[in-house]
Image (cartoon, rainbow, N blue to C red; front, side, top):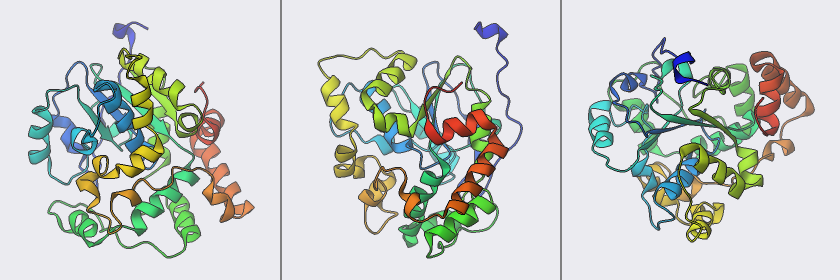
Length: 303
């Protein structure tokens, strides 16, 4: 596909809430080798950041991945603080976003990796993230000047109820789910976009990492390949969570390890009824279409 014939996405709106300030992308100066990691959230974002850090820095130990790879559209700290810090980075930059495509400034100069996961698994991880957050987290999101819209509040005690509200109110209390998946699915064939599914990464991490390296045009030194795999394993990341989690885990009283929680799929099967699960699957098919819904549920190569 010739870059001259590509119709590149255009930004059409801004998104603001207790987490987002999408206007930061309007002022972000892209470089030719920038990497943008995108997910809805809780779909393997931190794992992908670790993988890319290991590829860039060739299996290095003790990388401060959370500092190296900021969540660009998180409004804390404000863009006046964050943008100069990112601009000062001299390594190949890899930032993350949780925005849908139409709220981004999309650059042909960057490479985009979108990682997704069945929405039921997303909610189980999201609930753990939300339920274990401490007063520092709430204070940062709700009381830092510039918040648009309602505050985020403590979650309900029942994870099933949390899921049902998330489904009924499309991503509540965070942000819409379906538009995120749909807008990225629509651009999956662009030459600078690569799709990864959490389940595929779980099943064949080594194979998926090699695909990611090829997409990013990073040559793998086979002598350091075992180190890369070790450092990207769940056990290693769990044991060294403070390096990967924002502020070393200060937003959770149980520490960084609660952020990198279980890394498992299917935990919802013991809680959701068949009717609950069917409601999710019907909604996925209606919102995404059969091909995308199937990929989101099972992974594999996107059509």
